[in-house]
Length: 210
Image (cartoon, rainbow, N blue to C red; front, top):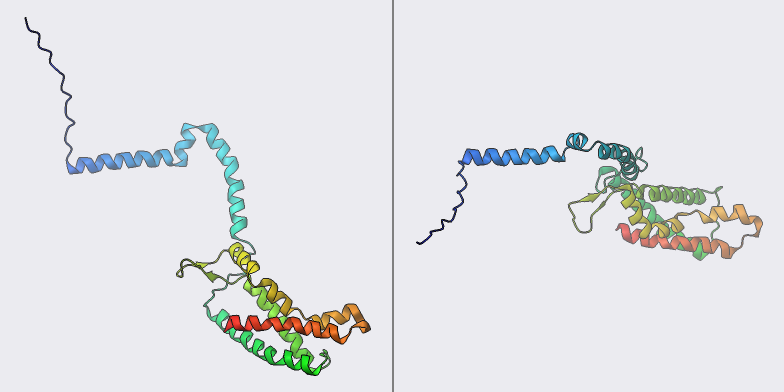
């Protein structure tokens, strides 16, 4: 007697029409959205939701602090009308300095606030210090994506501090007017020459603006 073993053939899955397939896909997507929503976590795990409610405000306040440093001071567009006009004025002052500093060093001219030349030099120093502050609020073009402008205050400050900040600071300080306040009558011509020598660094600032 021969026994025949019948193998159970699994039933094939029923074929779905196009409309039914789309409806099933939408149902799965809705289920994923529901599981990922905060309300789903609230109902599924109350303890986890309570912990998240304590952590989320701290994390959010940290992000706001990092992104909104000195938010009352606007970020300047690098190609905007204000920045373009400001850079033009800075360029003119640097061109004037390129002639004034060698003349002062060559003929030993002593600048004083009681003379017109001294007032002009002091005004230029203050103007360049203001420009130094504005550089911390001026956006810049991303090095890897020229269509992307970086507006993060933290990134702007970090980039400027690593590049031209110290050169701009030393060349902008009105040392010829500050040194007499501390040295008084003991100031020498070498001290005055040293203060003017630091202004020679403005040449690099001029070349950068050209």
